[in-house]
Amino acid sequence: MLGFILKFILTAALVYGLSMVLPGVVLGGFGSAAILVLVLGVLNAVVKPILKILGFPITVLTLGLFLLVINVIIVKLADFLMSSFDVHGLLNALLFSIALSIVNAVVDLVID
Image 1 (cartoon, rainbow, N blue to C red):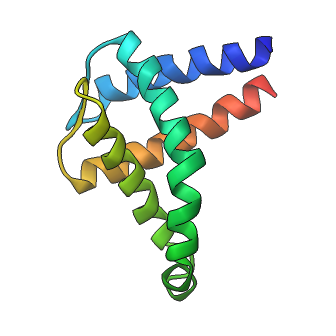
Image 2: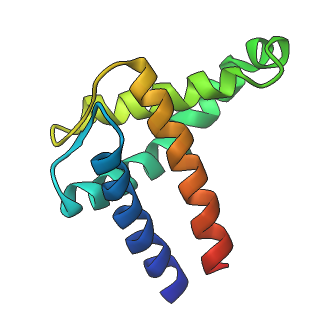
């Protein structure tokens, strides 16, 4: 349980840091970053599997690159759902999703 809470807080802090570093990504504060982590978690658990199933043929044809598009869709959905999170443009959403994937991988390596 402590590992889950530590992962959550560390991911929220790093998401807030990403919003400060990446251009075109605006986040209201650390509280908004924590809410964003929760929203992205719910979207990844509910919407992403549906998009993966629907986009499976395109994913196979593009050798997995379509998964980046699915990640951009998830980030833009979080942008739509949250008023305190704003991503300007698809390229910025792509950069944010790639950076977020790297951050999550590092957090998983450190905590687990």
